[in-house]
Length: 388
Image 1 (tube, rainbow, N blue to C red):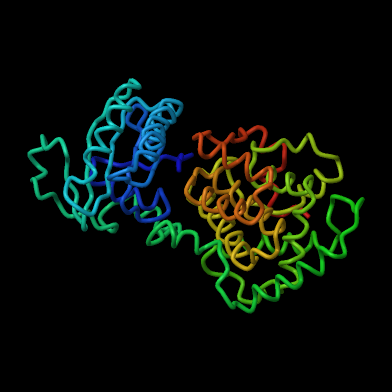
Image 2 (image 1 turned 90 degrees about the vertical axis):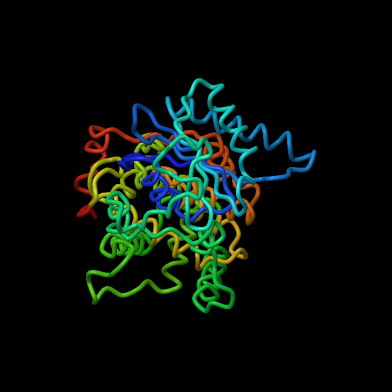
């Protein structure tokens, strides 16, 4: 799992790096190896894999290859230095694996600035050459004491307790009535679809798309600004989800919400025209700046909520929505959530091609393309709040 930052957080020293990591990853890591890549002192990439203390003979070679792959990804991210972190349960149990990671990183020409351990709310250094860090370690900083973490909190970002809990955000709750109602509406809509249906959704569905995206923008994913704005009905949520079965419409929505990822000009004129009338997070083309980042976060939360009311039985419809959510997460630099969405999408529909392609890109540490300012202006980014 690889996370990139369009707007790298500013951290000062290892203690602040450790405080920021759960917010950058999206969850509190447990029994993990983490590589924090830096380029000229600026955080450029974060990678995490599970800590395997005693791999079986069959696992050992794959684990070594995975560790060297992390170093390769750091090189492609232009990292010239790295901080390596092991989250462990027992003292020094992670040291062999961390030493292997240090060997791979150093052998790739990247300077290893430090090798840290985190255990039971404390942290320390394996190299033990820091007089300010005793052998028993130091308490982890409180999030409130780290300015960069305060920025995450202001955006409403809260790390999940674990990677498993992160998956809960895009997974239905068993027995949920809304999930059942949305599923029934999805099956009715899918049954009415016919070959040759136009790619552009009907006018009523486009209006529902605008309501859905406007709701994301107004709520920032946290609290609704307009108390009179109603929630979408299960039938309306189903209409949004089922429309993504059309590949051209799905690609248009991805290209519109994530500028630079998919070229809108390659799509038919009527599809381009329709999607450009949808609202999207306002601001710069990359999620830079608090207002834009907050709006993108709101979009993500709304997409996650839609994923969480689509059962596995909705099949390709759920896979399409999860892949859209994964694209937004990847475009924002959140590899953990992108991987989480893609894992569920491929579990539901192993043959869903775009999910498979994006999963390969995320695993390889490929950075998302981001449209430049001029391109965004040409595509009406600044006007998108009021279009349509």
